[in-house]
Image (cartoon, rainbow, N blue to C red):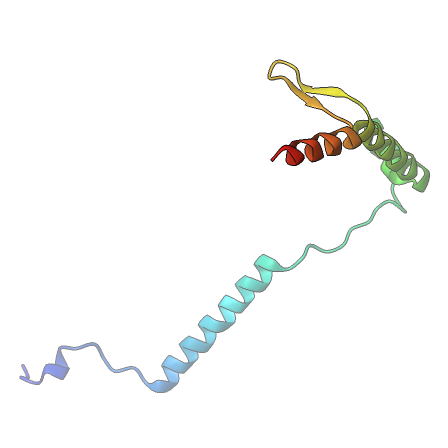
Amino acid sequence: MSDNPQAYAFPQRTPVFTAVVVILAAVFCGWLINRTYAPAPAFDNRGTANPADFAEDQRWKLTPEGRAKALADLQQKAQADATTYGWIDQPKGIVRLPIDRAIALTVQEHARK
């Protein structure tokens, strides 16, 4: 046995081996980040889809007319919600106010302060 402490230590790695390992680790990390954050490929089957393949409640998405009608319905509901009174949660006593009335109440409350 040798009294040299180097004989018991781990063998020395060459700088080339270390450089290769570091480069491979960097490439792997780059690949992993790219795979994780890459957007999914675009898939639009509306032009080639058979409407019979979709559920009845989803067929409106296939035509421009259906999407326009859904948008009009949504805007009509939003307008009705913004201009009428209604219950949000009746047991808790939470109501929906028209925007104009809510603004007037807020101004009145801040005028008292």
